[in-house]
Length: 430
Picture 1 (cartoon, rainbow, N blue to C red):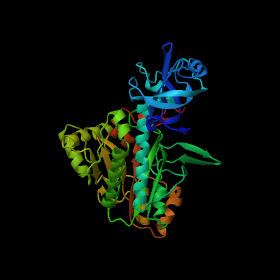
Picture 2 (cartoon, rainbow, N blue to C red):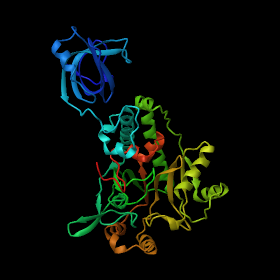
Picture 3 (cartoon, rainbow, N blue to C red):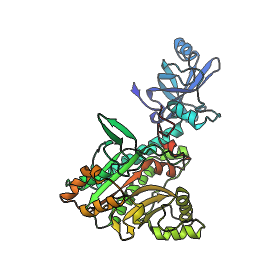
Picture 4 (cartoon, helix red, strand yellow):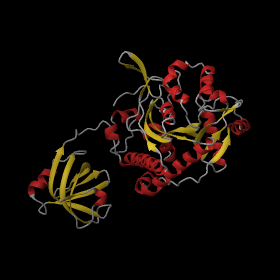
């Protein structure tokens, strides 16, 4: 007998289905329950005398959230929402659930977020939450497809590193044998080193870590980062074209392939038109001043100001936009300088930064000079700087927060809702 998910079954099929008991009712001569699997639910109904007595008695032992395996025939039904139900021929209770659940997954009692995360495995039994992670998986799958089609090579760089791309106090220290190491803030330095290897178009999708003690809806200590680096560019404009193409490709795939998930979440998604709007840092500062924000040229943009600018852009009908020509002083050492401006860029969506990057400095003498000016110990970056002495092309790239995109795309209240097991300053388990 063929095993099928609820969404695959058709009237007349003899199928084997497995899942969890969502609801159960015993009406004496009629018993039925809703079997829930990853595709949805299937009503399983048994009338006394129409099914084996042993099976009918076994159904009485079923409890909510029990794990069951059922074989039977799919028939038409006026009483089931889907218009069909299964008449069971055999039933196995694979494992029992405790009768009292720690969180009310499908009921009317709303559990607190911390409690939900404590029992995340139960929390994600909710179909709407599963839909979020299916959409996230599709986003990442499409991003990978996009880069492969564009001739990029996927690479896997170390998570344990000797130095951080951003430096500072936002690094998690690791005892690496007799040495001090860190969890990576970004694969940034290694991506750039690849530009000297002859593999001049690379991308990586993996975890990154920031020891930032923020308590906001947009920050976590561990997140999924999409990074790419490409060589032989003429300016940061080449980087922006690759990035906006990636976003367009990914959201197009979600709109096309995640229709059932989007329907469940009551969300409509459309691929954004490209090219995205380019806004200079100078123009952004001017707009924020007009809106009453206290900001001067050279200031780093605060989260509240970034959100405010998103509202300004929304009134103009713009959701996705690049911010370019940042002041040199507020960008990392590896971003190429252009007088008092830099060739760095941010990509924002609905007032939140999705990506940061730009054209890199590929000249060894300029790079070391800037590092010293930013009070970095050049000796700590010897492994990174060495390739720059043996011929490295002009290059650029970005780091992109895919979970932030999912959060904003689906209008989720918190980035943690787009992460299976979020890590925060307070949360290390489960």
